[in-house]
Image (cartoon, rainbow, N blue to C red; front, side, top):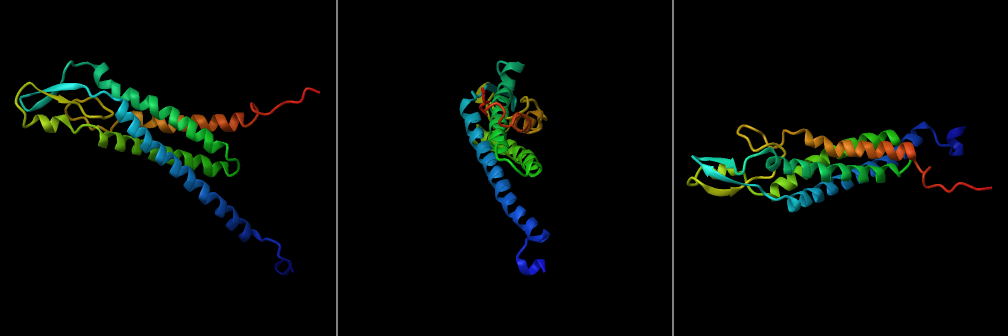
Length: 190
């Protein structure tokens, strides 16, 4: 008899719930990817390429030192963590389906971290080791934008800095879920 009265069965509830969750997940994913790409542009614009010299077909950072090779990594983290924090707080304000939101934010933050690196490094100068191979000795060349020291044999994207954006996102999501709208609600005085 319930079929004739129009009462929603379990199948209708699942379909309606999925219909609302999928657009939310896609919106969160799109926001993170666009934010990551924009952050990659900002990362490349704010970064000052260290200079080095070609010597015997190899590129050497000049002056050498960890402060010159660490600048790109520090700048990446300084941009990525707050970006993840803000985007996750915005996603956390969208109440309901919290489990799907957490999983989506975590996956989207990982993709955004890779997008940030890919856009920033694509806009930056090319690999100086490859350029140094055909240059005369003591030719000045700019360094490339990467997340590791410019040492021989280092892969530019093997870095723990990639966790900055997902860590910021999880911190923002946890904060928005724990604080909720308690801090914004007006308490009655009477």
